[in-house]
Image 1: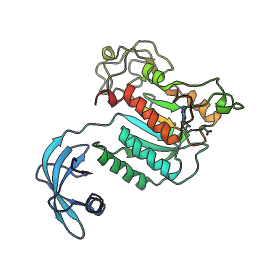
Image 2: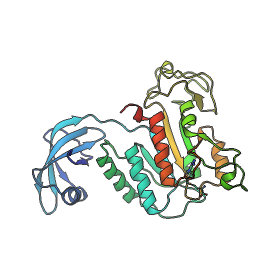
Image 3: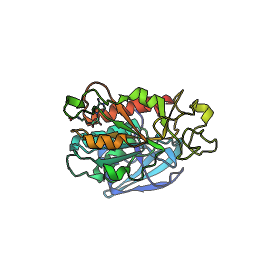
Image 4: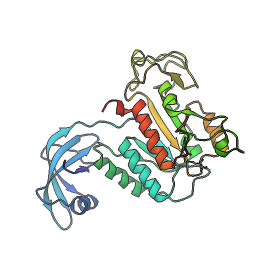
Length: 303
Ligand code: SAH
């Protein structure tokens, strides 16, 4: 089995000796059960991954020495997860699985039907960190402060499309809101639309400029000049990896209210999507939707 990994914020270079903080030392000593002389890997988003060795274990701490360079860092796709906090176990699971599946940021959002449970950010951050160590990432997703849905979308950068998991139809009297107004299946919705890499970059329907720093070259995407839905335009082929930016929005156990659905669907950068004919638990919806996004748009196309 490969050596266990430890994320360290410290600068990593060959020969560097690093004193672990208390939590890290406890993790390495108690959870990973490592002792002086044992090999580990250390990593961070700036310096990549290095082989290292525990050189000293004392009652109070631990020192590791960095040995050789192993892997260059690679960024997670620029995907935000916005999710309504659910029960504690499910919230933990959402953070762990979203980290494994490769999101860059996670924001709890409070919606009208969110069960008002406190979100323990420190707990979620340590879950994200451990999942990052486990899953061979180079960074842990940033866990952002909870915000109301309205605040989270206030001043939203329209270049970051929000993929809105919307299981419901428009008719409040029907189960699931009836058939009218149902969202497009996620695969089609994401495959055929993507955000502009930059707001105002060539304008609506305009071509992507070749100098845009994170944006794709227009000729590489085969993008049409027509736009759909304001910030989105149809794609002949999937965008190149890492092009643009996305967010995924998943609701609480009780779903979004009709008022929230109307508000979301009125925003030009929101892509409502269906995750099929069954109602999924929020945690399942996160995993399922991220799998599709990574396959169609993200880094599953280029392992
Ligand atoms: N509206 C339901 C359940 C909500 S499920 C109820 O009243 O009980 C929790 C969240 O998962 C939803 O808000 C939605 O974002 C997502 N979700 C679950 N199943 C979905 C589906 N089939 N299509 C799209 N989104 C779905």
